[in-house]
Length: 88
Picture 1 (cartoon, rainbow, N blue to C red):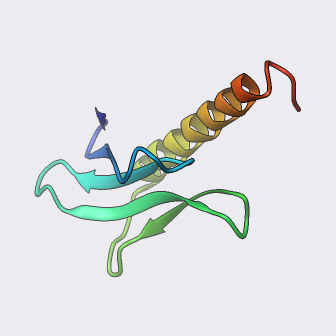
Picture 2 (picture 1 turned 90 degrees about the horizontal axis):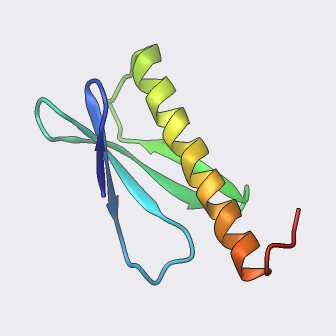
């Protein structure tokens, strides 16, 4: 799924067999990768891994943060579904 916002867009990639999603953060103007949102198992949360030499406005960072929050909420819903609606 591709979700576009102001100057960037988000594109799912990776295997559908993974437990967590992987999302590319791309520029709209040049279609270049700015970084990746992935699950960081050591921290047990999604993180944004920017490409070297990239820089971001506050607005772009807010969009990236919003996307991470969406991924976290989706992961919680899926975990609850597998637990039969029970859980934290």
